[in-house]
Length: 231
Image 1 (tube, one colour):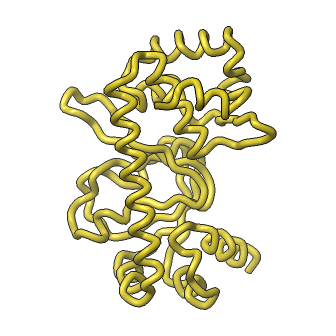
Image 2 (cartoon, rainbow, N blue to C red; image 1 turned 180 degrees about the vertical axis):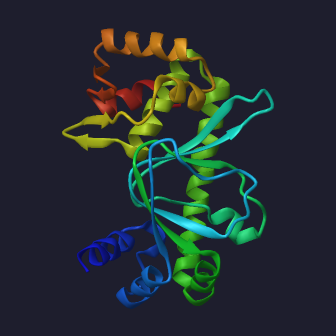
C-alpha cells in the first residue's frame, strides 16, 4: 500500500498528468506494470513495436540511436518524472530509438490502449502532451544548433548545460550532475571524441568553472556558466 501511494504521488508530478484526478491516476496505476532494470539493461530497442509508454519512477534512462557508422548518438538522458515511448504509441510506427538504463531504473509501463484512452477522454492531457512535444522539439533544435555551430569547447559546455537542466541537482547556484554519464557517453551526446571531453573538462576545472568528485561534475556557478556558453 505504501508503494502504491508513493507512486501515485509521483505520477501526479509528471508534467502531462498534472491535470488528472486522483481516481484517474489510480486507474492508470492499476492497469499498468512496475518494472525494474539494472544498469545497462535495454528497456526497449529501436524498431520494436510501440506497445506502451514508460514513466520513470527512479533512475536515469539514455535515449539513443546508432548512426550509419555504427556509432552511438545520444538524443536525451531522462530522469525521475520523465516519460518515453509515446511517439510510436501515438503514430503506430516502430520505435525510433533505443532506451537503456544507465543506473538502476524503476518504471511504470502503461499499455498503449490505456494511454490512448486517456488522451481521448482527457482534453487537458492531450494539450499537455502537445506542449511537452513542442518543448522536446525546441531542445532538439537547440542541441543540433549547438553541435553544428560550436567549437569543441562549446559542444562540451552545451552538453553540460543540458545535463544540468535535465537531471542536475541545484543548490545555492551550484549544480551537481551525478555519475550516470561516462566521458564516452558525454562524447556521444556532443558528437565529439572522449579525448576532447576529457581535455575540455580538465580545462573547465583549471578555470574554476567546474569541480569533479569521482564521477560527479559540479558546476560552481550555473548562471554564470550558462551566460558564458549558451548561444
